[in-house]
Image (cartoon, rainbow, N blue to C red; front, top):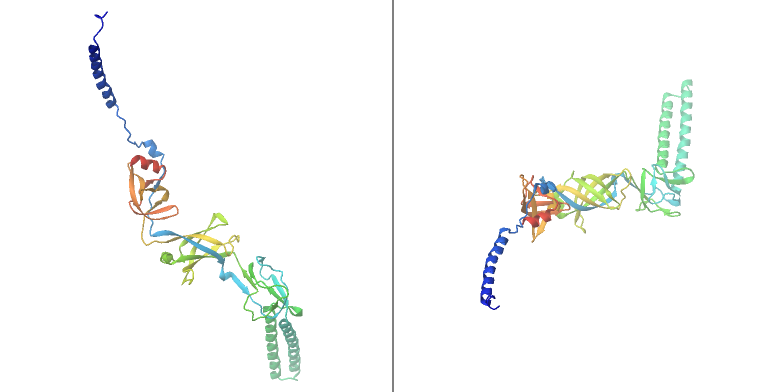
Length: 367
């Protein structure tokens, strides 16, 4: 049996030969199929991307400012007492909607009693003058009175008519009526936004405080707070969009109608005025508002949606789509960003197309 067995040294040699033959074959097979990790942009992918076209700013920029809703001063009336007296009743309350001529309060007044007396006296004198003129005419026709006497009666009647008209106008102007009652009525239709009168209060005509303030809210003002850094950017006629917390889904629009050109000593802001139509009286005096002003810009910068920007390593990038539908990364310098718009100082020009969807995935794959 020992003659048929192979020597150990021969077996080891055969194994070495087989191993040497197998190893080159294995390594050659691995080199034939290298892994390719390069990202390929297909037409199908490009067609599914959302893009935004870069637009020129046209020397316009948007400012985000605060404002306060105030009454339209041209349609607001402060009511002061014309006579002295004691308040009897105040049927009108703060916040009430009133019509022109509606009774707001009544008071008894000695001054008003004097106006009543003057009206009664002038009325009686007017009647006497009318009778005297008729008598003078009859006497003139009978030859018992001269033409001069007739002319004198006519002049006297004209004087009495003027006096009667004056006393009645004074009574009406002061809201007077019989029995010395002074009636305070609204001079216009609107809302009572201020009230400084109560029952049994004593009133004097030299009071510096008004009794009522009535305003017509069919139009209101938005007084915009403009900081010094933004004064040069706004001008009369600029369009504004106004947002109110109470009506977040309802924008109000207008134009700057007046710039006051005076800075407040405490807040260091200047006011600009916008007149807003308010037919439904939705806007109330005292409401706070956010205002977007389409203002002038010192430099013309192209603008693109801020969603397109990619921030990486303290720099901004976008993924551009070339006219031949090839994607590439473009570094940009951001001039400023306002809400959903980015103003680009360098790297883009009007007309460029920028990817707006899946841009982070594309950026990581292309860089």
